[in-house]
Image 1 (cartoon, rainbow, N blue to C red):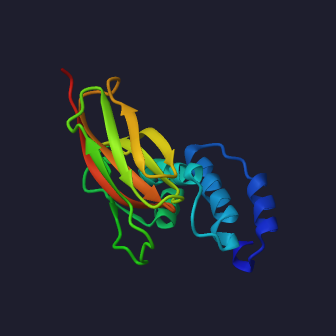
Image 2 (cartoon, rainbow, N blue to C red):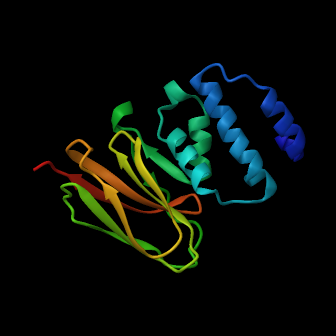
Length: 184
């Protein structure tokens, strides 16, 4: 139904599918987001859809199915899989479109002992996601952002080690920085 641009028929077929395993569940989720966005000419995602697609994109395709690749394409991500399934690292493709406004972040203190502040610089009204992920690609914390300022994350419950803070705008990772969590 996608090939004939019938959103309603594609949605009916999608809803009739049973998701009996991880692969099918991921496929149904990605196609549902696709039907509600790209198929209708909307090429940006809500924060929830971005997070859902990202969680699928960082999975290993041999375990999680072909939807992993679709999620990566939709988010414009390339995964460096030279390591094993527990060490996926995300790399963004070269930007193919110009971002209209500037958006950036700084992290302090880094290394963090218990509370980390992420200062986001952006134009008012810009909507995005700020998230912390571990080295395996698992999202540890996520915040929706819509204005410049300081966003705080508790890190005292995290294990000591390396994490990544990602700034996502319109479903695209615009910046990634390392965060080191240490225990005193």
